[in-house]
Image 1 (cartoon, rainbow, N blue to C red):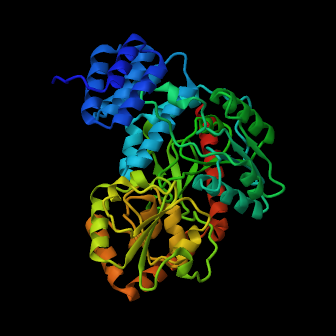
Image 2: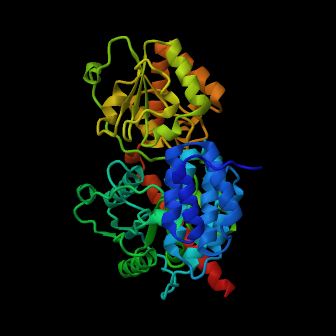
Image 3: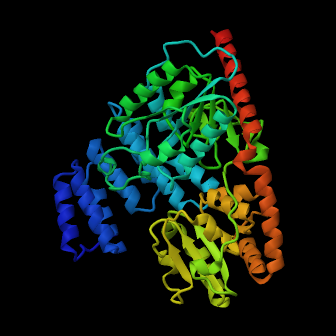
Length: 522
C-alpha cells in the first residue's frame, strides 16, 4: 500500500527530524503532538508507514518505534513487541518499565468494556511478567519468614496515594481506619508508583498513565492521630523508593502486610517474608503475590486463583464485597441544581466520561433523550467536558458538571444512575445504591459487580431495563429499595470489620502453611 505525503509541513518536518535522530525522545513527542493536533487518519497512516520502513528495530530507537506504532496502528502485535523489548532491556530500567505498566493500565481502564477485556489487555501487554521481573530484582530478605503469631501490627501498602478525588486512596484509608478501630496498630506506606518523572519521555507514543495529584493536607486530615505514614519522594528513582520501603517495613516488623492496588513489584519481595492480604482497586485479583485477596464474587471465595498466569503465585479468594463508606444525604431540593418539577433526572459520575461514553451505547442514550423530552442527564466529574459522542444532542438537556464535593447531593436529586460500559464506576454506583437511586449497569464492570442480581448481562437487557424504569415510578422505587438493602448487606464498609479480620487470619494461616511447606522441601 502506498501513502501520499501529507500537506501538513509540520508533520513531514517532524518525520524528517525523527529519522535523523530516532533515539531522541523529543522528536517522537513532536511528531505525536502534531498528529494529534491534525486528527487526520491519512496522516497517521503515512507516519506509521515511514516509521515502519525507516526506523531501526533495535535499541532505544526500536522501543520508540514499537510504542509509537502501538499507538498509531490497531495491530496489537506492536504492544507485545514493546513488552518483549522491555523484558530484554539491559540493564533493567525500573522507571521505564513501570511507566509502561502504568500507561497500559490507564489505556485498559479507558478502552475496556468489562473485566474480561481489561484482564486480556493487561496480559497481552505482558504486565504480569514485567512485574515479576522487577520484583525478582529487588534485594532478598535478610531475615527468615515472619513467625506465626497474633495480629497486632499491619503495614498497609498503597500503590499510590493522591487526593479526595482518587477512589483508590479512599479505599486504602477506609481499610486503615477499620483496622485501627479494631485495636490493631497500622502504619501506612506508599512508593507513589504512579508518579514517575518524565514518563512521556520513555516512549514514542508520548503518553503517560493516570497520576493523581498528591494532597498532603487532605491525607493528613484523614489519618488517625496515632498513625504514621511513610510516602516516597517522587523525585527519587523507583529502585531507590522500593529499597527504602523494604528497610522501613523491616524496621516496623509487621505481623501482616495489606496491599491496596493493582500491581507493585515491591510486594514480590515482601511476600517472601510476611503474610500478604490484597485488595485490588478493580474487581480482579491483584497482579502481585498475596496469600489472600478480598474478592467481591462469592464464587471465587475459598478458591485459588492464578488469574495472571505463572508470573504471580495463586491466591485464595475471601468473599469481602465491602468497598464504600457512605453517609446518607437528607432530602435535597431539586431547585438547588436548577432542576424543574416533573423532570426525570439521569446521573453518571466519572473522571474520564469523555472517553468512556461512546459507540452504540451513547447513540442509544441519545435516542432515549430524544424520545423522552422530560429527561435531564447529569454528567458529573472530571473537567466538565461534553463527551464528543454526545455533542450532536443540541437540546441542552445533557449537563456537564465538573468534579464536586456535592456528588451525594446530586445523586439524591437523581431518579436513575446510568453506568456506561466501562471497567470502573463501582464507587459512584455504590453511592447511588446507598441513596436508594436505582442503578443500571452491565454485569461485566466494577459497577455491575456491586449490583449482584440486578446487574444487566448485555446492552439489550440494559436498555430494556432502563426504558422500564423511565416509564414506571413504582418500579424505580422498588429497584432502588432492593439495591439499597443490597448495599447495606454487602457493600457498606462500616459493616466489614469481622470479614476483614477473618481475611487477615486466613492470609496468616496460608503464609504459615507455605513457609512450612518450603522448609520441608528444603
